[in-house]
Length: 347
Image (cartoon, rainbow, N blue to C red):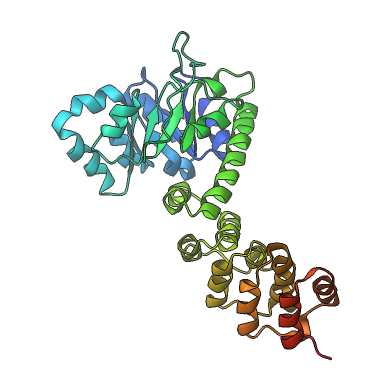
């Protein structure tokens, strides 16, 4: 997740800049103008295209969230503390009618100990601030915390990867954009880096069976391409629970000419293959892709368990290619050759 926090200062043509950022793919904007009164907030919001309101979290004058039907509200640290025993009732009053609620923290252990369920948490400073001179980074590592945490402080294109390595679910950017000479170009560069990390994590979580992390990652947005690619890895590594979840979102197991099925066989992942067949994939799909890939895998892994299962489940002998026969003849063990010869190769 990439979050942009507005400049604290009023900027020339600010609404135009914000509309441009949204049009370039900005997922979430945190609207924070400490010097603004409620009317100034209204003026700025009215100049933003209403189709982007569902991407805006507002830091002050929370009543505007309902007035403009925004994404939700954000509680900065001191206002959260000031709410005391009323904090849960306050956050619930927004969450129960469909708004998101987030909050700022400056200590990971305080964040971890919080009993309030925020949709996500902003934690800073991870690195030394770009917008606040003298605000030194703490390098907080949050890999041990099972909450959605967005890293802030010193985030730019060069530090995005490190933020994710420290266990954060996304980045929050302030000075990395507003202090640059070309605001839109800086956003595009940072967004590109975030997307690279996101694609890598999507592949990693689906292939490793990290269902909780995957759900968190896909909770706000996903494309058909996202879930189709993730399903390839889930099937390829036999992660059935993850695969079920992705299919429930609309992922297509046939994507890429059944690429996930091919890699399940290539990886000698019998459970992944069984899963695909249970979901309706034909054992003879793509002119014998499964049986022919299994010949190579059987020789490489020196194991016939996968091949035996494919044989038992009626793979067609007519689809075994000459290349597969030659490969088996040249490199296969006697047991492998006998299995194929007796069941598949016609005299």
